[in-house]
Image (tube, rainbow, N blue to C red; front, side):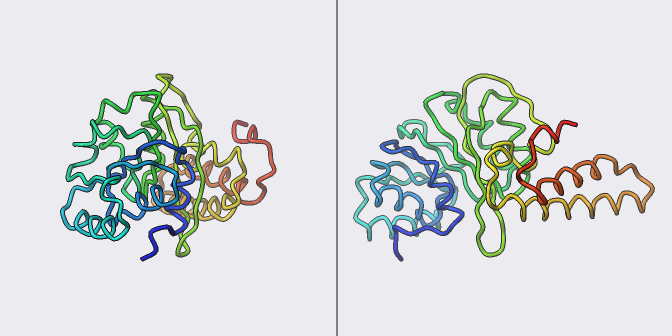
Length: 237
């Protein structure tokens, strides 16, 4: 194993790391991300946490092989339990369902600190993760897409400032920052999402149900997929 290489999904998440900040990697598995952050000199150290002993045992082997036992500690806990005193400033919750990520965030009051940064990569329910953040005082400061094994992933970077925000439904699904920065992967990703809402609309219409919402989202997503150079204002018309 080369601990200084990451696959695109985790590399995209690591791109939001701040130099010199300690980390907490929740659901660490093999500790690949902590090893990268320390090995590349991005972070002085942090905690690798998991709810199961098996992943932590694999992480421990890799950390010892890299010689980072004094810089990366291990924590057995549910979500962020046990990480309160780790001094982590960049907190990663990657590769979990969006509903689980929301429950982890909601159970941890110490996250409401402007000095902390959340880097989240939900596998599902991206809408719910963004809605939770924006309605609980977190600002989504940046986002990006990453492609790996023919799948496109969303990575969300947020920080607490106490302000409540409201985004459109399209922005919650795709990511307002992703739209604003014209992420290179936005066209194919929006096209895939449009197909999901087209299928949902077809099913509703065949059953005689109202599919206006699904059709509107399909239209907005197709606009994103066809031309990333349009004005974002078109989504509000």
